Length: 112
Image (cartoon, rainbow, N blue to C red; front, side, top):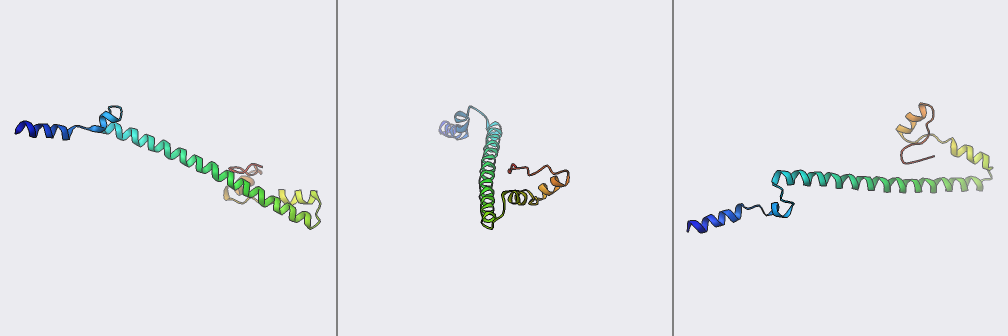
């Protein structure tokens, strides 16, 4: 009876994950899983950021194109339209700060 009980305890105390995950003990597995989770999170954030910049840039170009068409319909010359488009103020706080330091232009997702 003690042999049966000892065998059951030995089977219950055996860590099945150590055989599955490269033979690592519980502390090492935790570090590996935490590192992998951090890397996956970073990749997801990067992909979302790139997609946002791409969509925001496309939207900005579409809005500027509609503005140019509207200004052409009003009878403005190309030089006047260029002055209006280039004269728009920076929209974000960082862009206003950069413009106050000598007009570095738009930076971040938007390239001039």
